[in-house]
Length: 138
Image 1: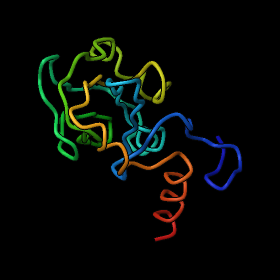
Image 2: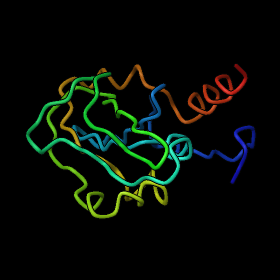
Image 3: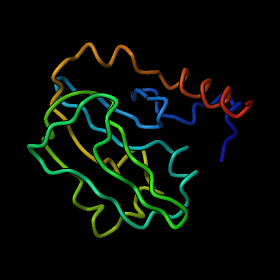
Image 4: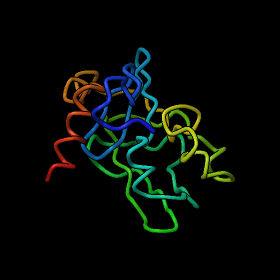
């Protein structure tokens, strides 16, 4: 596992990140949202995921679900406002996929963005790694 100071980016550069450790991949008007590798490491073995339903609405910086591990229950915050168009139902039966592939197949929800400008407030992979490094220093 690379250290945060390593030059090779540990976090995919095509994603944007929040200070609450969520990521979003925006493809035109649809944003795919998940939790970061850092978040899943902090949680440990994930045993349950509670997600909303397609058609529900999410608001930027507000919770839309929870991820439970053997250690804790963590709320998940939406980086954007919009309507949920898809939920990763595979996680209901296999929540541990989040530990194995947090930035890929273990996405949580897909949202139709209500305001594309909200993504401008999110961090790039480099900014997120710098944020993690700064937080670790405190």
